[in-house]
Amino acid sequence: MRERVILECLRNSGDYLSLDYFADKLGVSTRTIRNEIKNIESVEERNGFKLEYKTRLGYILNLKDQEKFENYLKNLPSYSIENPEQRIESIIVELLVNEGYKTIDQLSKKFLVSSSQIKNDLKKVDKKLRDTELKLERKAHYGIKIEGTVKSIQKILVENYFKENRNITEYRDKFIDDFKLDDIRSTIKNVLNKHDLEANLTELEEILAQIVTLYIRVNLRVLENINELKLDTEDLIINDLLDKIFKDKKYYLTYEENDYLKQLIKLRTKDKKATIMNADKSKLQDIIYEFFKGVDKKYNTSFLEDKEFFNLLYLHIASLIERVKRNHNTKNPFSVKISQQYPTVFNLAIQLSKVIESEYKIKISQEEIGFIATHIAVPFEKREEASFNQKYKIAVICSSGGGSAFLIKLRLREIFPNAEIKNFSLLDEEEVVCFEPDLIFSITNPQFKTNAPVILINEILDELDYLNIKESVRFADQIGSLSNPKKYILSLFNKNHFRCIKEKIDYKDILDNMSQCIVDEGACSPSYPQDVWERESYLSTIYTNGVSIPHPIEMTGNKNIISVALVHSDIIHENRKPKIIFMISLIKGNLELHKQISKYLTKIMADKDIVDMLNRSQSYEEFMYKLKIYIGG
Image (cartoon, rainbow, N blue to C red; front, side):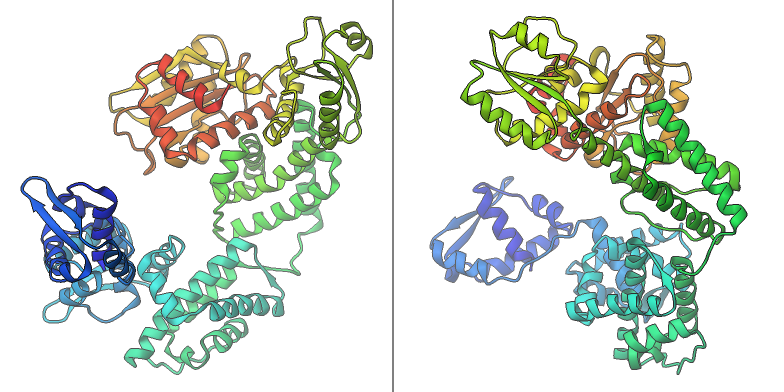
């Protein structure tokens, strides 16, 4: 199976590739690669190619018959490459789903690596399991297996299921086709509905993953014909699930697994009929009302005007409090995404959580904070869209005020359906002033004084301009007169707040130094370093490809600054490696600006090549040159 990878690499390279190259790529020893190449050499001549070897360089592909070679390559089985760490996880999965002993030889054949490689891997498995309740057992003449509680076994299996580990995916596909998977998902929903229980999408997906992994283990028991227990259970919900999903295989479930499933359903669902007591209801509603009353006053928002939002958030937090009291740990795969794309919303969720924690003496997890943030994001977005429906007076200034101006007017009408839009030529300065516009769209900077924000546009609008206009208008209320939001964001970078980190120091120390530099300039409150780290303690802001965007829970600045640190040393924080740190300090109340900055930085972090290119900069000037090219300001 590795044959395809080796041949494809040689074909695509067109140059010599060493044994070490293939060993590193495939996560195996050079001895294993030599054996693979021997197999390839035994069939090469009749399939239109030949491998040629040169000392110190390695192998190169010599094509004799392109058509024969491509046909041969096409018919080779595909091979999904696992790196050494992934193979370790696959070995753990193998030992967890199969309860009997596995020999070194069996594992060697399963993972297509040498026995010595498996022995080395098992040492790493042993080390990886030390911090868990699982233990690697060795028995002479029998082999190896992993012992542990059902809870600890299922925890590892479900984690690997969500990571789409190759081994567990292969087992799932072996025992569960798409039709069966849909059937299991539907059965779970139907059984929960039947018993007046409900769960959110994340909770349903976890229940599904738990049942699928249990189903795999039970099927392997059936194949081995072991542990048939003739299990009886008095739990109606579990009985329904077992009867409909496992059918006759349910008798191969252990008592411990049955109890585990029962506790899982209890923790991951809530009773539809459950209500909060009137006294508690009034108290909680008052807490939420007072919090958003303060937010609306401070940030000129209108959360309390949205009654639907208020009621849904109240119901969610009432349910959250009950979950926390029952030690119900909810997983939320969207927390990081919300934190990254809606930083101001996530910060409001943290602030509200702190109030709830204080009042109810509970601890709210980052996953639950993420769920609160999703509720807050809805009116936040609705407010932004509503701003485009306001009654604006808009002046459009073009070369002549004729045909092209009319086309622009039509496009702007799509964005501002209720606006009064009027066209002007470059010579109509007095007329524009008399019109008293709220917004000005112009092909050049006006030469007259105006209090209205000015947004530069092209004479012919394309789709990109259309999106840029919406973006520019969102800046207008907070920044005032404005020609280009990209240029404005680039202006927030400053050489005094740029550094390259070459020594190995703690991530916290880097943030402390960066934030203290902003304090020393008098650009924010003295508590800024502590505020930044407090926010970091809720959920790390080191995101995709090592881009970090630290900021305080609440902005306290009197100046807008983006501070940058390029990390050129091997620093790890919470198993993540920061490469570029963009620390944000903004003037109080700049919610929209914070969101837009995060939007630009999110685009950067999505492109690993761009992140690496920026990270390799050796000076502020080089960094800004590259950043301007990418952003286009």
